[in-house]
Length: 307
Length: 45
Image 1 (spheres, rainbow over the protein chains, first blue to last red):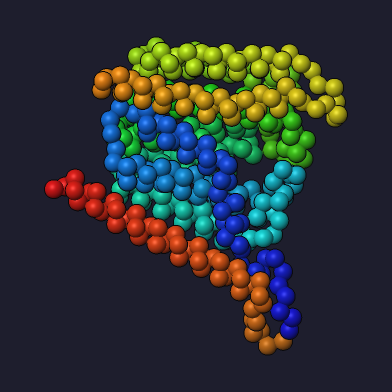
Image 2 (image 1 turned 90 degrees about the vertical axis):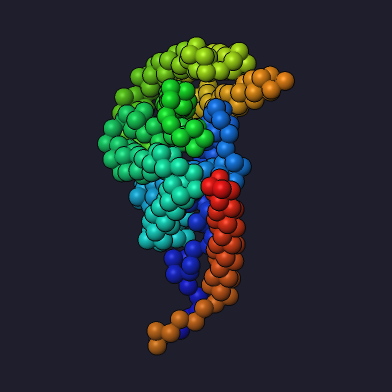
């Protein structure tokens, strides 16, 4: 008998399990969760704070694994995702499912035991929201999948905040809303330049179903809403002027970059989609910068009050 | 073909690296749980 095995017979490499958690997405999730925690009024012991962030990361990783388990066939049909561990055959589906369930359950349990029960409940809701409501239910059914599914990515700052305060107030809900309204222009900008991939596997992304022109208008509309929404934490007295200035400048730039995307018409297959790619790249920077400004604002106000 | 599975080098390498990673993670979790217990005990006292 030959001692050589096919890729599936071999045990999956630990790097494949790591890839299953979508580490790049986790970095954004951890960052916004950490910012929610640092911007919250009150203090948290560093060990408990670290545990809360770890639980957010593990929960996000578990949900991502469940997402890839469910979408393995879809991923195989798209160039961007075909090399992932499941569609490339480096891992079997059962391992991915068990890994996702195990990671999710461990994160919720640890959050409940070490931090507080409310943050554990919200973490559980966010995992179910992403893995079931978005991945299984909405994504294959409606072009509004990204809009409603964006809620899943909006939970981390809310969880980080609740880990410190133990209750839900207007400020963390506003942070949730900022990410919620940021998600459609972010993902639709991406969907515009990977449209053919989504169309090929039958995912009803907005550009595929409603067409490019409608998607471009909607991207602009969400950027218009995002500008006053990003200012609301300052209007309700939850932040200082540093955040207000940063939020205004960043949101205005986001809106300005969405204008060429909204106005333009593509010229067929060879179109390089430069404005769309620029908007997508900026959207990632926007989220990092606005949450960094939130923390800087809080930190400076605490320093000012202490001196 | 007797159904016996004879692991080759790649199989053994993957198993070994997975065992190391899982072992390190378990040690990390044990340390974290210990630290959480200490913090919570201090809070309770």
